[in-house]
Amino acid sequence: MVSLQVDAILFDMDGTLVDERASYREAIRLTAQFLLADPVSEEEVEAVKRLPGFNNDWDATWAVVENHLSGRPASPDAADRASSGYRRLQSVFQTYYLGHALWHRLSGENPPIRWIEPLILRETPLVSPQALARLGDYRLGIATSRPRVEALMALQQHGLGEFFPDHAVVAMEDADREKPHPAPLLEVQRRLQCVQPVYVGDTINDALAAREAGMPFIHIGTEPFAETALESVVAARVRGVADIVDICTPSIDRTNPA
Image: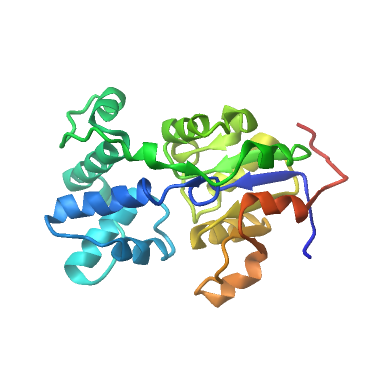
C-alpha cells in the first residue's frame, strides 16, 4: 500500500467532500436547457465536465450550450465572460442553485425565473465528521472553485465547518486563477504554512492542478483518467475520504509550524 508522509491534506470540495451531482451538475443542465429552449441531457453535461479546463460550472454551462449548438464545447473567452449573455447565464444558474429569493438577497438582481426549490438543498456529504476527525494529525484545507459564500454554506449544511476554519478555505474569489491552474492550491498551502501537502480530488482538473503545484495527488474514484499521462500524477486512488487515513502518515519534520 502507498504511504505518503504529509503535514497537510488539502481537499477539493465537489465530488470529494460533497456530492453535487443533483445540485451543480443539475444547475448546468437546467441552465443550458433554459438558454437553448431545447432539452439537454445529463450525458451532455458529463461529457463536458470530463474535459480539462471546465472546472468552473458557469464555463461548463457555456460549453454545454456551445456543444449542443455546434458540436464543439468551446470555452468562453474574456469577451464572452464580459458579455450580457454570460451574465444572464450566471444569473439563471445561480437562481436554480440558490433559489430566486436567496439569489436576489445575495446579488441584488432580479432573478430571471422563479425557482423555490434550491438545488443546493439536494447536496449530500461524501465524508462524515468522524472520518475527518481521524485526520486530526494534519492541517486540513480546501481549494475549490465554488464562490466563498457557497463553500461555507455547504460546510455548515453538512456539519463539516469545524474542520475547516475560514482561512483554510480558498474559494473562487481567493486566487487569481482557477483550477486546473495551481494558484488555489498554492494559496491554501501558503495560508496553512505547510511544506508537505497532498491534494485530494475527483477530476482531471484536480490532478492537473496538483501536478502544477508540485503536490502528490490522491484520486477519489475508481477509473483511470482518459489522459494516460496523468496517471503518473496519481499517488493513490481511493473510493472515499475515509480511506485516506490508511495512506497518509504525519511528516516528522515540520519546518513551518502553524
